[in-house]
Length: 380
Length: 79
Image (cartoon, rainbow over all chains, first blue to last red):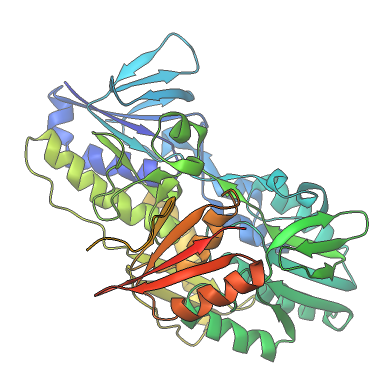
């Protein structure tokens, strides 16, 4: 029996499990191959939903579905936490303390975790929309926010969905205008480097829109600490910024499992960016946010990486030489307000072209968010 | 070809797309001790301008920029 273990039930892990169930259907039914998906959370969570929660357009329940409804019946689903990876012995330990699983091929798809406590004062002083609780608290705060200084600050680097920080101020601007509150709210966007976004074309696009919509741009802004009582941000560069409502992109960290297994620093797995194989161990792959590759930590990346790794693993399970490689393909929708959006796509080393925002692209983004559940099932 | 300097940490941002070499650097530098020498490998043409500019703002030292055939290595020391 050739055993394939996937750790993590987010976009990458779920798409991969379903694609392998399809590609290795015969081998699984003949008892030659096992595809096992191990995840601590019985729900699959689609995180891009959270961006819409503060504006009352989605609820946190819209973001989740039971994972057993999404995975193919040929996949062996284990709801448990993996507590240890031994790459020398090709074994996984589970939190139930009695189970040790052997693998022939392992995929880590454990995602990214929020760590606001890494910056002093941030957890107490800032809101975020990167998780269910944070998004709901921000919704409640925003509902009562009628005047003052709203600051969107990119604090954590790297972070999930590099598009979302640009989207939020554009959305909140439109949302406040609809409610007649915009004149009493100053909006500021801060970014760590010398322009509004890491991608130059997105930075140029966002800078023009921010100017048009009276959103103040602060660059070279790396948050050192937040004083939640005085409502002041201090930066590494020695500047201060006062706020009334702070929305931060919090620091992220990978998985302790990765660090403990010696697969990478800061919890991100060091991988070959094309094969997605771990550099520090044999028979181990990483996909999605936990893989340290030079493109976005985004759902589209996890989806495309899952397709590549499914092909490579299926080839190896059949005794063939894997040839599929990942070229860095990334696709992101970008909301430019509450009823218009744009869309970018690129590969490693490519600068995307930012199309003129439109209502059809906004509807396409909302439509994709609904059809995402077909993506998770491996159908789209 | 050998490197001109010894580095403690190498960040390979060649062909990095989003969010790019400078963001890769900032993400790693935050967790490094003072005195650590970092080699940032980049193919982005703007890196030779925007990395030194950020180092100046953040108070880290630029050691040298080494041009290679198809990329450049930027050496810096964390303060």
